[in-house]
Length: 269
Image 1 (cartoon, rainbow, N blue to C red):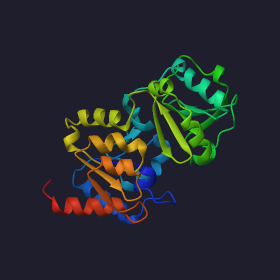
Image 2: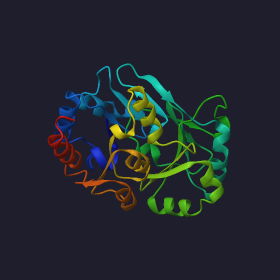
Image 3: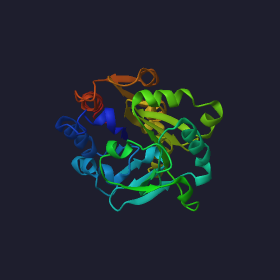
Image 4: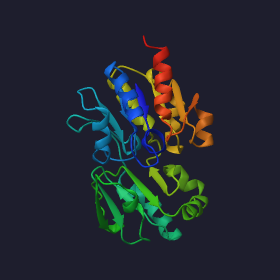
């Protein structure tokens, strides 16, 4: 199985998959390798990439919401799902309110733009595929499950908020800075590794069968657990330290570079 982060990894800076990367991944997919996109976004927001890579066969799945939901691509059926209750998000709401920061909360179908806080930049950063619904925190349902929460602001403001997170809050969430302007708050044990483990189990495989490509903090788990963790040249230093291999950058077909090198030498694998 080959697992791939999108932003900063498979996607170029203009948010596209190059033809070189497309052809390299189609080749191994046609040879029977499971090619799995791993993203913080819902599947509808990345459907164009799934179609471009031809990942629409019966055995194709996607890891979404940073591991909280594993989706069967063909029919959008859920293989595995895990989320947080509203009460688990109360400490985070209290924190961002005190910091005068924005907050968006996602269930598995839409984004709630919290109107009782500073306006968020997240809708402008997000490229389609999910509805944005204005709501105050008080109005959120206590019956629903929430996949994650997002603080999206100018990078220098995110630096400020991040510096003020205390140990108590840090213990209540898995916090990742997925992009300079985006900080994600997930359930404490939630990670792309969770979704990948569910999918590997489904195919009677384990992490020795996994090659993972990533560049950022939210890829650390899968990079360190994979048999081969491949980090982009443009990746963060701590991610490179956790990986096994550094390939080219995301604007220079870094994914295809390593896929062709490895599977060319290991054709029988």
